[in-house]
Length: 377
Ligand SMILES: *[C@@H]1O[C@H](CO)[C@@H](O)[C@H](O)[C@H]1NC(C)=O
Ligand SMILES: *[C@@H]1O[C@H](CO)[C@@H](O)[C@H](O)[C@H]1NC(C)=O
Ligand SMILES: *[C@@H]1O[C@H](CO)[C@@H](O)[C@H](O)[C@H]1NC(C)=O
Image (cartoon, rainbow, N blue to C red; front, side):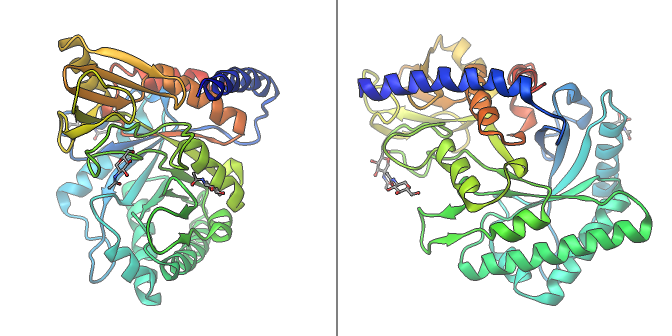
């Protein structure tokens, strides 16, 4: 344990010094991506409230197609909201690029599996997505299929991406406009090794067709297991492969170029109710979730909770994550300290950038600002 800890401390310093070198050596070959998803259902957080100085790309979350036609039926009020989103963010100083994201965790995998398996549904989906992007002024489209369930789904995903890229190129040529960006939000690992059946993403098609992928390096522990606390987005885990370092490594190993890998950072945490407040580390016994809807609180809510309850805030050096404890409440999350180490790690790896789920969760832009400063060349 002690040796492991020392290794990690050394590793952290090693990474940070590597970062210093790579900062100096960095070229302008590809612009860093500093992304953030905007949840359209939070009416207290309009697009105008986003401080665009910390971002390069903002994603509208989410649009969902008609599950019979696989085309998008955009209602009048939604259309107004989409135009407001893109025009507001394009007019900001500095402007950011806008994409709309299709699907999301709540949508589930059923529609996508069916659509991707049918050539005619794929065509409707692709044509309609391009039409929506142009009509409402987006710079790109993001696919958030959570998650392909079988190897067949993965094969069909490859066809979908091949055809989507082809149409995007065709459309750009016909209209003489820059091609729409195409991205996807994907599982933290390039292979699904925790659930049956084992399956791998189509790395070749992803590399060829997508501008980048948003790797969802979070949700490692949560309300689905209330018997023990856990870091939901640890950088390292010495006992399992459920960690950000493993996930990003698996994507690199899959062959997707580092210039297309974007690391996910959560602006929310997950809560538990401890069995015994005296045992309050990462992995301590728990009996239930804690405060929040299914034990989820935004970073801003966690900061508020910590202040209100005079919570003890700890940094888990080994895993690189934060947790706070107040009575029997235990909250695992990321703050500026853990994000600083993660950004250092990501830069040393040589990947392209990071994204947040979701922009409304930050507290006074603390984390967004720190991350952006650390990734400016
Ligand atoms: C967007 O909507 C807000 C709130 O309704 C409004 O104040 C703002 O002027 C709109 N902006 C654009 C560019 O349409
Ligand atoms: C819940 O988490 C604990 C600690 O990580 C682990 O030992 C246990 O196997 C998990 N239980 C389930 C059902 O996954
Ligand atoms: C982690 O994954 C590697 C292969 O990617 C495997 O060899 C190793 O056994 C795994 N470790 C654990 C703890 O599952």
